[in-house]
Length: 422
Image (cartoon, rainbow, N blue to C red; front, side):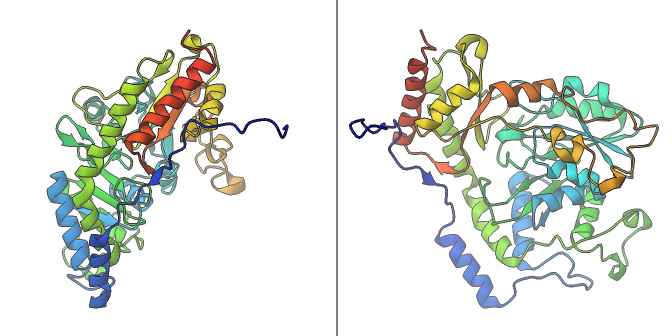
């Protein structure tokens, strides 16, 4: 570059404030636990299998907040997924239907029990599991359907429940990114047999690491609690053989410190969701006239938690590739991402290497030999990842009005520079 050349001036000059919802309330709560000296309340003794004071208090507040009969806290949402699979007693070779647009733990929790993930394509507008494509994937081995409330938008749970009821299947929900979102006046994650949320550091509320299972089913809740705590049913006189069936437990327990933080974080959830929704509305208002840019929708009867601001580039309109537009936006300083990889194309599935040289234990079975994880089985998800999807990071930053104005200005500059709006 010539010494006489001017340094390129990015549109975005204002610093983005990294989200930090931890305040003096959480600090005081943690200090209270530390001073008590009781950092965990789980003991292998009758009456002490359900955790300490703060864990129980947190779970009671979750039940009240989300209007459910049972809440089970865990040390991570991955642990929650594993516990849910164990609770419904899936067996080797059973099939669980799920979306390819989710975190890998949704599928690995299924593999944990030597069961089979069956990927069903997503809707183009919400990126959630498409109910219209489920029936064709149901077999005699199907045991459950897992809805994924991706990016903060709830999936069409009514349709999924209807399909499940007809086929006598369990319905599970991964609402890790959608805590606080609603579907027909009920919270995402509560409209199924078992659902739940993540509490890891990049969710709207968090305890560093953690997870929550919610359910109205007493039997399933009891099994989840047992799995969380080593399945130490031997100390209980009130466990039936049915509840013990195929039950292997782990140390999935939440600490008193994490629960104390969670209690304070839960109080802030509504305010955080409203803030994300206001930011999203301002972005939509500023970007809605850009040609070829499809903005996020909120389906009627739903509310959106906006974990991510999900968009699409219609290249038939822009005549410019998504990746060129993405690079220009990044050059201006926009916190934008391109693509969302479909987990059915991870080497774990594509090459069936989960169990080393033996591959998947069921992969040589005549009943399952046709199951493959190749490109083409989820065309919507694959196309969006490869050519169309871009997103603005909503969880990481608390955007000021100036941030939003600069992001909008950077988009307009990019569209004008690439002559898309002409």
